[in-house]
Length: 34
Image (cartoon, rainbow, N blue to C red):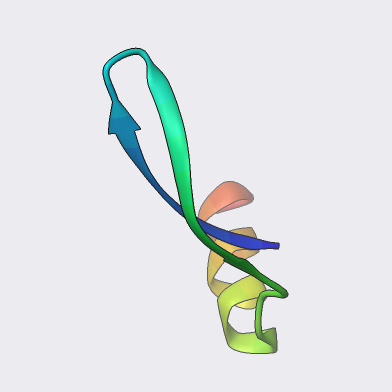
């Protein structure tokens, strides 16, 4: 899941949410397990 959000005071406001692409998943996991 790919989520874009912004802060409004102490609350996060979701702007967009969609299924992450294959490339986005690979980038994420390469940064987490590097």
